[in-house]
Length: 321
Ligand SMILES: NC(=O)c1ccc[n+]([C@@H]2O[C@H](COP(=O)([O-])OP(=O)(O)OC[C@H]3O[C@@H](n4cnc5c(N)ncnc54)[C@H](OP(=O)(O)O)[C@@H]3O)[C@@H](O)[C@H]2O)c1
Image (cartoon, rainbow, N blue to C red; front, side, top):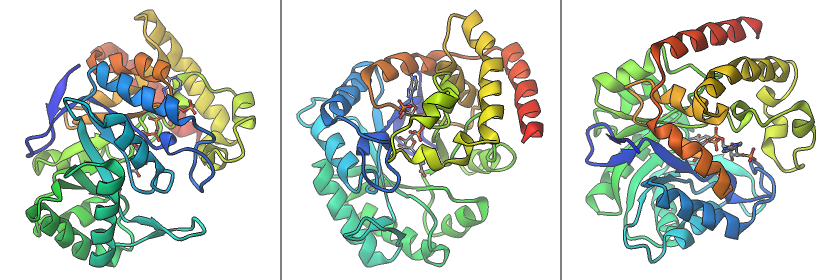
């Protein structure tokens, strides 16, 4: 497994990090359907055995449940993995989710996350969404103070645009940005990656397999049969007219993966890692077999020829939408 340094920090991350959103379990607004906690714990432990050295979670995943499961999975391990979690998405007793960036809110969130994860310090604490936008400076100042107090080691942001990064940078340097990036979500390619590289900000990209859509294991029937509480039922990329165009792209990509004896899931991940500005990909998994398949993508360097063919296919897909 390749290791890359996260921006200016001293965190050395495996190029694949384990994403634990789906592990938050069912029955909340952005759930991925039912999930067995024992299976989640096995998946996390297997990922670590396979050389993944960091885990991404968030307070809101499963309304605290993902952090609790991560806490259970890492308990008693001799080498604790690097833990990245997030603040800002808070919820009420009915499960309604809000964005809060006020100092008091973040201070109580960090205590709750430390407790659920059962750790003394969070290695990378990230603002999940810049919402409300007017409070990002207050939140960022608070994260700076939490570093001084030893509650967190580094502070990062997620889903920020360049303007928002520029607003918080002077308060204290941003360790990392967590943006979406996949063959179907290429918004960061134009300017954001360059900005991060110039400012030595690490980039850890999320949903590299576009929530499983790029793995080749989705069909129209599978989408129709997703559990009621799987939020992907409401995701436009899993609905017509986008779904047909996305499934066609996946079929067009299949031969590129298979000629090298690889899978589509591995291709999707290797493709985001081709960019040197990307520190690592956050790869979601809810079963051991999934991470066993995807982990090897961390070592796959795509050829120039394959990258060029994929570019043609993606440009064609973009025109179809
Ligand atoms: N900061 C943010 O706003 C934000 C947003 C999204 C995600 N994230 C982070 O990024 C992580 C990864 O993103 P993601 O989970 O949205 O998407 P992803 O990594 O693109 O896809 C993960 C999903 O794909 C399916 N899958 C995984 N391995 C597979 C395999 N080998 N074969 C077939 N299907 C496979 C699984 O779902 P099924 O088995 O159910 O199909 C899995 O839950 C998250 O877990 C989270 O930590 C952050």
